[in-house]
Image (cartoon, rainbow, N blue to C red; front, side, top):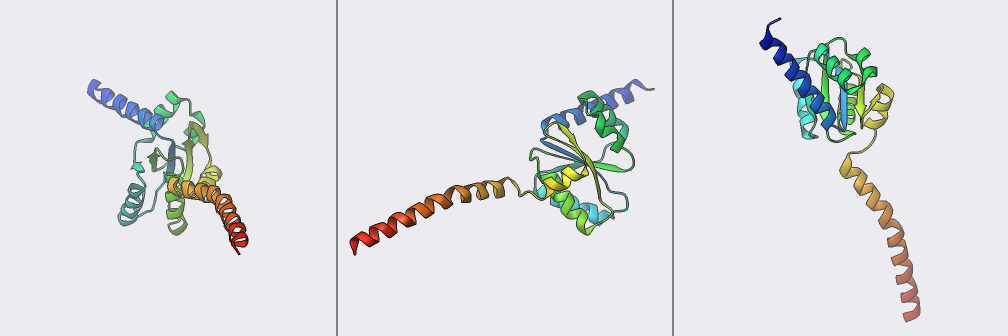
Length: 163
């Protein structure tokens, strides 16, 4: 094999390893049968959530997964796959699952979330969670509710005393 080709393949594997290490979530999905327009629409949706969507040769991804010890991921690396990388642990699952509901040709296969290889069931559970901003607003709502209730009670007592 040509030395330049071998070096190029090593660089691609190193790139995949770096992306997997720097991502909170990596999702493998099969896109066989999607039209160019549908893939473009999917990429646009993913980009809006800061998710990188890349197609690599399965052999390159397999080598990267082996280097990282993600051997459970190997069985899912067959067929035409694309990989979504994100710093957000939920975003790739949420966007891909939402797209898959209306485009049955997109199939979520497996992923790595926070360093753990997960299956389709876990990815579907993650897809039901809101994004980071949504989670923060839900948390703030939970915190504000008791404070608001307490403030209303104090105001009611103050109003009762002033009468």
